[in-house]
Amino acid sequence: DQQVKQNSPSLSVQEGRISILNCDYTNSMFDYFLWYKKYPAEGPTFLISISSIKDKNEDGRFTVFLNKSAKHLSLHIVPSQPGDSAVYFCAASGNSNSGYALNFGKGTSLLVTP
Amino acid sequence: DTAVSQTPKYLVTQMGNDKSIKCEQNLGHDTMYWYKQDSKKFLKIMFSYNNKELIINETVPNRFSPKSPDKAHLNLHINSLELGDSAVYFCASSQGTSALQYFGPGTRLTVT
Image 1 (spheres, rainbow over the protein chains, first blue to last red):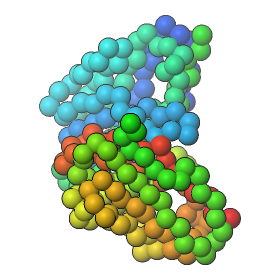
Image 2: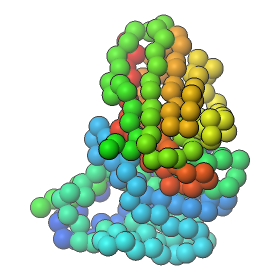
Image 3: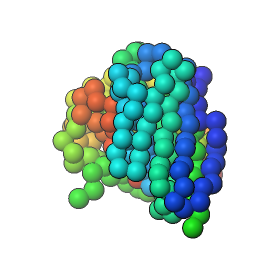
Image 4: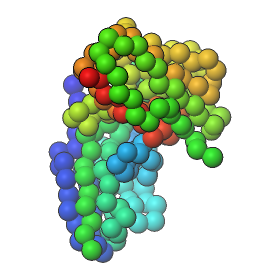
């Protein structure tokens, strides 16, 4: 039962343009959301997060938006750079019986072309 | 100065064998995890330990046994390996109940 969904397996964007990665979740108990970036043969690395009490968090070129009513979050990268090409995972955490576990989406592979 | 390290990075073995994967973190965290990424690229929690105590044990076959000798280490032992165990296993750590988890580089296990 997948509680976090990333419905776009891949996305291709030109360098300098905006990349928008989307994520939906079903469990209303989730109260913290994270985006991880993953290169091949490496572990996921933390990128940016947002608490459910906020609707936006910004860190440099990366902004995460949260729409609790729609159970939807998105990651905006602007401007996109070729080094941003990676797989991006959306993850959610809650104080439910899932304990401290992160629930991950299946990832979106982003390709930024020069 | 690697934060979360795993050994080995690649592990190829035959069905029926027993193998272990080691994980160490030097971040001073007190919570450690094992995740499995299957062929569909889906990352899923297997176990979590807090201060050497098991707090999460998802529906994982009992052939998988985590061992935490101290807060900095969480090893994964797998008995009687099966073809379906082939996957990438990631170790992670965090401080207490923080959702921010730091991941190791992964161990690609191939069972032939």
